[in-house]
Length: 445
Image 1 (cartoon, helix red, strand yellow):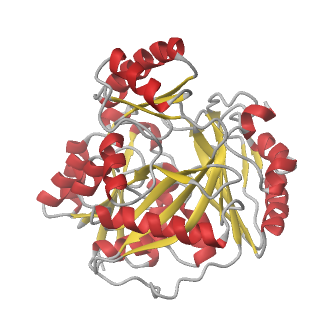
Image 2 (cartoon, one colour; image 1 turned 180 degrees about the horizontal axis):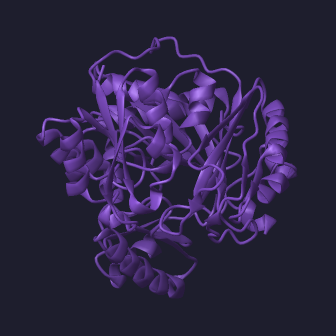
């Protein structure tokens, strides 16, 4: 097993990785910005190094500062968490070139799947269903219009290098396409340094279902079930559950097999997620993208499969076999994750501030992965996620009931927060029946 691990991230995911590392006897090293000096993950690490000011570009994305921290602390490996540098192929290559262990997929896999157009083409070649769309960037507006006419409106205009629900726009006709094309291209150049744009068929009513894969040290790729991620605002997830209430046993078999083919097509190692769009009322699904990292919503998979994905990541990175039998994977029960954000529960706009009250719910089947405690300040410099409230039970209805109780017991004041939204959602008939899709929040609001 790896002996020392630098966690190149912050907040709840850094705290969660550190927890597993220490359980395994791995020395855990945190890096932090000046704005995060008082957060729990800094105290809970065996060692912590300040890597710069609040601005992520000068701290959590500062590769030189992070590599210097690894060198000064004698770190053997780097775990990037999610976001920041987690899908930066150049950083992964640099880490390995310096003789450190990269806890994630190889740089070539990150590069291959980081470009959405290249990823679509690779998946189509591997026999994974993809939605109708361009096989190369739409070089200009004329090319975009021609592609949209061939695909058929409405279309999705997407940044080829985008991710996390950013860099996307919907066009119902040519006039809207002209506006969205320029908007997405400018955004992509500013945010990702790459203005490449693809045009893809847009499905107004769709479900977002993803499959957790794990590329093992022996070269095999296994699928650890699916997660339903259709409760979204601005194309970003708020709730995830496993298994999906929309997936039949027959569809699950096809979905998981396609995800394994996707991983095998790029020689995938370590944890990753194959995201798909599922057309409601049918067994038709399409590849959306692959996230070459640990996902925010990984705890629901952990609970239904009874394993620790961070431990499995560390074992793969160390060349060790998994803790489970890949030929005898057996999910059990139902898990739901609610993302507790510092945001207005109506419009979902960020609402940072000092946490005056923070009392987490407890009890059977309740787990809270949090990045903060009472007295901490949620700053405007980073994502608004404060904690993940995860519940587990034998059945979906029992898990929903457990979630209602846990939300009611979560005492939180200071920053604006979306707990009131979850109270509303957990009584929503579409959600409780399992018939919802990605338009649910729009219709609730």
